[in-house]
Amino acid sequence: MTDFSPIDAALTTTRPRFPGDIQINKSRFALKELANYDGSHDYAYSWGYTIFRTLYGPDSDEDFARAIERLAVYAKYFTQNDPHDSRPDEELWSRYYSEVVQDEERLSGATESEVGDMFDAWIRDHRRAATIANGSLRPNSRFLFCLMLDEESIENILELPADPRRRNFDYSASWVKVISNTVKTTEGGASERWWLRVGVTDYLWPLWFSPSDPDTMIEELGWEDEEDGVRNLWGDPDLWMREINAQYEG
Image 1 (cartoon, rainbow, N blue to C red):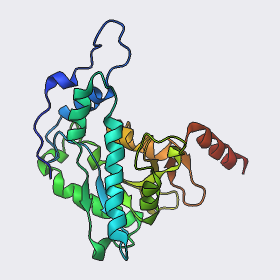
Image 2 (cartoon, rainbow, N blue to C red; image 1 turned 90 degrees about the horizontal axis):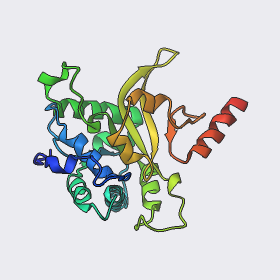
Image 3 (cartoon, rainbow, N blue to C red; image 1 turned 90 degrees about the vertical axis):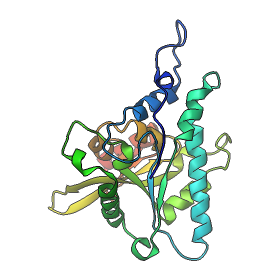
């Protein structure tokens, strides 16, 4: 649980700084989103994901800790938008808080569906029950998506350079599993937890701040893996088109 103070309204102003200004600090838009706290949960004025660890065993403690640190490095890099308007960037970074859930007995080797069920329980613990029935209230994305750090996700994170400014690296190929709070019924009548593979550098943090319609994110953006059916929100649009065209041609 977090305890962050309300955001200074001056930092959420997105008006142009001077006539003709076309590059408004993106952190101001993010802070404006956080400032619009609706009272429906206990993570006010902060951003970040709940992270469920499913990899346990020899050497996994160190790898997991490094992966959490590496994610934070890239989250901080996401907030660094404008050296000429750095206060909003610094304020946004100071409000980053990703909560880690570790339970070897229940989570070791857990599937995406099982993580989703634990995420549902986590949501129930942190949403304010009296506000849930009010459809006009929208909790922040912490309550729409969580991260699942299994072996694949941890390996992908640790492959990212320690310095996100490094060149000559294919950042678009590094993804992490993002589990949705949505369960849907397939055409065959089975219930499935909806989840995505999301690029750490290109889509993970924008997904938090601008999820649009979560169903759209899950069902339409990116490209679908033929083998397991999940959406892949990583890579560039050229890759998406190649994968989509290949499926149509197949």
